[in-house]
Image 1 (cartoon, helix red, strand yellow):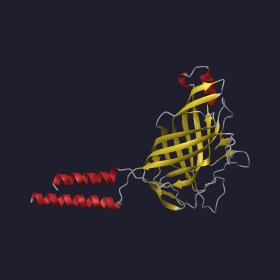
Image 2 (cartoon, rainbow, N blue to C red; image 1 turned 120 degrees about the vertical axis):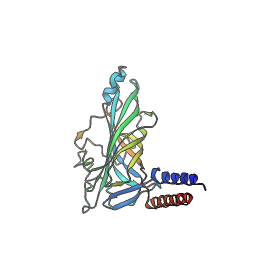
Image 3 (cartoon, rainbow, N blue to C red; image 1 turned 90 degrees about the vertical axis):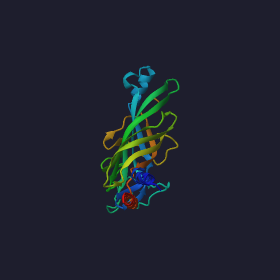
Length: 291
């Protein structure tokens, strides 16, 4: 093989070792350093609710959507039911508190929670039939690790949700729909598929750094006969939810989601050693040619 071909082969090897995204990473918690971490299965009992929806529908009915008058916000909170791996299964994590009730197991329970927002715009509203359709835009999310596992859903039967944002912020980012998605919230359910960029990875808890994310979420309008085991919140971490109803009022949903991550590539020691040996070989070949 000619020297130029050797150089090209080494360059390709180095590029493969240092630039390809990793399929999974490591997450650190009270169970230790758990490998093959791919993402979170956010529990189906999570909640999503709208703010600004009534004003948006009124504006649309009046055919006046100038200045963002038909925009509103979808808010979302949930807890992790499972940590997922890149094989489509769950990571064994005996210390994970997948039921946010505030109870502690001798200090060994921990939890993961997410708080997110998503912009949406009313695109159609039929006053006569009470049917509204919305397009989803972009938003922000923060994921927290809490070694005390203190999230509450009910707090004495009041529907006061607490403990979703008091942990350690380990992942933050932005997300948006890949293609315009329009769905009706008033028919009882909806689905959103999003992709995003991760802007912060806390290296004390997740490695290597995360560079991207993909999310699939489903929404089920509350109340509904199809909803079970859902505690409708009246407030979340001190934020009082607006009044919600049907058709032309704010909406509350039971939410379910799965989130996967794209990790930055960190070369394994073996890859570094291989690249190093190849470079040494190249140097030796050059010396032989020079002599």
